Image (tube, rainbow, N blue to C red):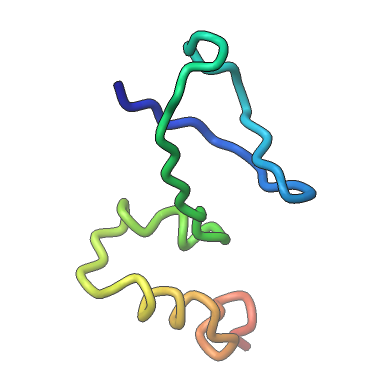
Length: 71
């Protein structure tokens, strides 16, 4: 069974956003993936970007390309 759940890393511990359907002391395998930060990074899969994640992040964080900074 595979379950995806959001969590917050806090003081060296992952705090899950909800309960898990496992029995007490049941062994599980955990895989952790950091979430990209920022609105553009959350839309990475929606915008039809064909490039790699690192290039999109560079574009998203470049202050010269920020539409709010344009004259």
